[in-house]
Length: 476
Ligand code: ADP
Image 1 (cartoon, rainbow, N blue to C red):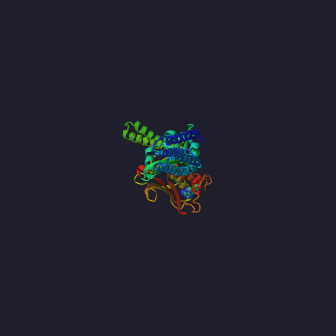
Image 2 (image 1 turned 90 degrees about the vertical axis):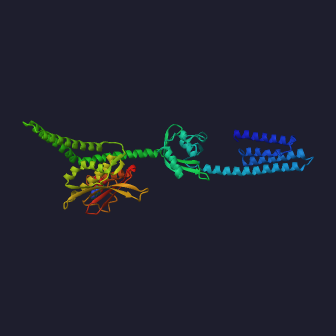
Image 3 (image 1 turned 30 degrees about the vertical axis):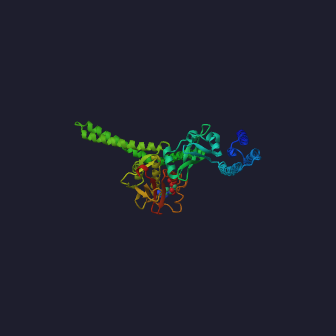
């Protein structure tokens, strides 16, 4: 028995004694013994089934004793009825209390089941006050049940939500449930990231009364994911440098040519100036050509620098058409050198995306270079690289969405249908110096942008790589 139970038992006995004394020794003509009901109700809150039966038996004994002491010599019908009313009240109350205790007991047993799970489960009322806290929650957060219950959850756990709480509350009210990742503080001050699932409990009229929260610790999983992303981005960086290495000769030419033009135009300008009558119109023309060539060289270098820089993933609004134009600036020379004609077919309207410019450029450069390399064996027809973009409505997606489609098609030897499924796996290559990482990285780049990439081919007639990327939500 707990110290509190001792006190309560003493109080119950004191109450029963007081009622017995009033019932027996005061001349009140009322059913004082009915007050034993209060003793039984009090006892029901802390006594076991046997204890409660013992108290009830004591109350019955005291009621009958009091009746015998006071009324035996002069038996009155009204006194007998009062005694019987009191006895029935005691018996009915005892039965109800026993039933209630059994129901509470069953509920407690069911709630104890929640302590078997490793998930941290707690319930909070409409004011965010914690009303239930299971063993998993004690273990995860370090707060014992007694300390957590009654506290405001958001204050106790210093919750950091993935979006404004008002939005989450709105979703919860509309759907009756919500799930997402939340960062909490433990009792020792350290943070824990949890996958949290909320379910709203409603009353008969559908009004929310409480929310049950089930949390799983995913801190380690998140750390592993971060490490994996880092490794992926380093690998992407290395392959980007390798791909650019393949383009280096063309890019050097792409920069050299405008620089040579700057020099030629500079010399021409000087000649026009040195004439007896300087021809300022020609000087002006030469200077303008110098500026535009200088700009072109610096543009190529700027794009190259962006591609070689090792940066973390940056998601920013961009236009797929602009992205392709930037890529073409770097690969154009390679196309000329390899005798490949470019057929550009870009959508007339912008294709707004949200993504990492460098990574998406890397994916497109890789596809274009693969196409150019595949076409090197073609000698019986003009080599053609077709790059096209368009907007497509996908009604099968849930919810329906608009996609930007980027298609890179060549008329090279194509791909054997038997190997098409292997193309995107790491280390698959048919080139003697190939790494086989390009397409696998392409796919992870596109998928990390919520898109897909597929290859189709008619053997002997070329290959087409089609990228679907979801159009930016605010522009869809
Ligand atoms: P790598 O270029 O190092 O071989 P990739 O992953 O970029 O690695 O390409 C894998 C393989 O896919 C290539 O070796 C080639 O066999 C095939 N491939 C890719 N693009 C084409 C294409 N346009 N036409 C024919 N085969 C292709």
